Image (cartoon, rainbow, N blue to C red):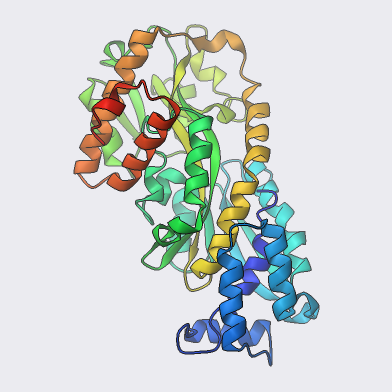
Length: 392
């Protein structure tokens, strides 16, 4: 999460619209303003200038943050008047995990801008989400699969087969970080503050013969207990869904309770997935989708103007995150890969497209996001059959 510069943007959340009836502050924001900037009053002109800086897309995030800092002078705040924000982080490894460690690196930057970020690690994503809903976290970093609970548009980014590779993911995230998409980032009381790439999700199996859909029939497949649609999809191909959570699923695979596990490559070493594959297993060389981690905030604490800067800063960190992912993925030995022929890959694509359309019709996936993803796939490969006969 380097360079996301959450720091200063958190402070700015308390001063947006502090004067003038066009952008009134809520009672909570008025309280935060008094705590953060005692005695500061902004004119209508300053507020309009702030909005212009927040949404200007022709300058880097750092340049814009410096401009805002100079405009309202929060960089001169004394230590005792720093704004406090609580950020809950899901890292399956916990306090010493890579996600939480990266998040902690932002704390020093935040202090420079007068913000005290309290980072709270969670190994159980369900517990963290409940804490976030209850208001005990100002923001929470969670999987894209969970993010669908808060915003169906961005929660559809992780749709099965919708994003073939990182090239497609980069284009998609560039579009979503554009100010013209800002309205889509707010849903109810929540706002999407950033979307991070988390690598491809692959199928880990304990038997190399389970490399086709037909051979998956009768096998036990791990599915997330909070997502009944996964169970329906697995049952549709004749396999047996075994409900579990993200924490328990790897253990069930390693102990032979399930035969098939979908997981990112970065999970291979820390979760010791080689144990589940044993002597006869492997990894199907075809990603089901590209996963994400999404930072979601309470709109009360993070107005969309502030979140726009954070979203763009997150995008600026894309290359660094991909490089880290590649380093972790290199730890997977080549002998595990199960190569599949092009005709079987096409079979997967047809199945996944049908699944997306069905789930869209059931209001599980957001139709606008699916259309955007199809347009990106066709932009990068116009020869795809779906480009001439779109179903999404």
